[in-house]
Amino acid sequence: MPTATVRMGEDRQKSSLLVQFAPKYNFRGFFVAEFSKTELMQRTFSLALKGRGRTLPNPMVGAVLTKNGRIIAEGYHKGPGYPHAEIEAIGKAGKNAKGATLYVNLEPCCHFGRTGPCTEAITEAGIKRVVYAATDPNPLVKGRGAKILKKAGIEVTNGLLSTEAARLNEVYFGLLKNERPFVTLKLAQSLDGRIATIDGDSKWISGEKSRKFAHSLRAESGAVLVGMGTVRKDNPSLTVRHVRGKNPYRIIVSTSGDLPMNTRLISENQDLKTILATTHMSIPKSANSRFKKMTYWTLEKAANGEIDLADLLQKAKAFGIHSILVEGGAEIAASFLKDKLVDKLILITAPIIVGKGVDAIGDLGLKRIDQAITFKDSYRFQSGPDEVFVGYPEWSK
Image 1 (tube, helix red, strand yellow):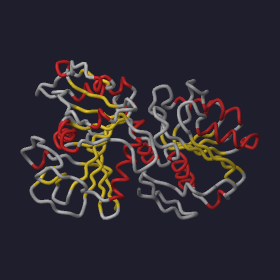
Image 2 (cartoon, helix red, strand yellow; image 1 turned 120 degrees about the horizontal axis):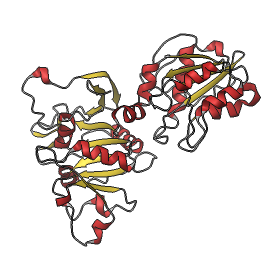
Image 3 (cartoon, one colour; image 1 turned 90 degrees about the vertical axis):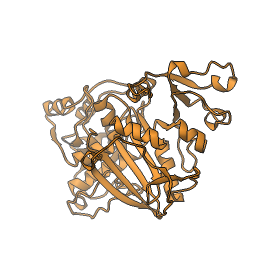
Image 4 (cartoon, rainbow, N blue to C red; image 1 turned 120 degrees about the vertical axis):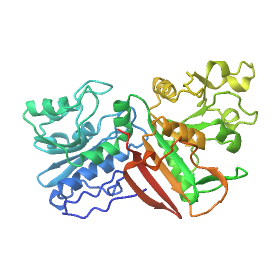
């Protein structure tokens, strides 16, 4: 995962959002003079990332308290029901929080949920200044938190690294803006754009480091989604194995609902997280116990006779799934792209050439080059021998 190098005393914006600002260090007691405002905000990003994969539907938030030229306390949100980052930092600082400056990557909340409003705790602690990066898109907050703090006589500054802060919480922002789960399409291909040989062999195209990275993506996702082609050819487990983390839900998209007898997603479904998304006509009527532990989503058909993916995403949202990692195959990838339902593409390219084989992405129906999908805010990094491209389609919000 790419990191940002931060130099003491230089006001440099080097965070691209998979930024990790020296999280292993204990910054408490450091002189603030050694850090710029940008670096202190980057520190909140690093703290926020400690909650990665555990905070949804809440955002990842980190907080830093400074006073008299020193960092006096830090905090981060560990997940729903736990104190928010600001509350944790204030609790650590105690009475010393009075007169302090608070740095936080997201606008402090001002409503009651599982915990009380952060604006109230900030005011009661006597904090004199709040610096936050991005405005919270939640309609219950969205500028109201800042207004409440200003009304209480607290100096409020916002906008520092706001773009990077939004990328940090891209799933949270996307969920609220699109009113559906955030969709990441992840593919591993050869230099010539193949995901398998002509006989269907695909183990392994990417290297060990990239496979570990792919498992970390699973651990951070609410669900992993594949089509029936992938189920038949690869018979995947779609579990988290090479890193620590919880198994996501596993969604099989199939118009037929006809699953092979040896499907691991059924036989290894001890955690009851396998979901078959199909039409009502395709749900197996068999009394076979192997199907009884599965969850079934009855979906609408699109005009082309395939499953309506927009309907699928609404079912996922209602089910409580906030992010989906689409792992293939080629036709599923093409369907999500054609419907403009991909928010983020992660393309792992291995330094090998396969020749004739299975394309990474199916037919998109494009006739001209100027119809090609383009990306914004893209970047690349090395993963062992592989190169990883990360990009956001122009249509993504």
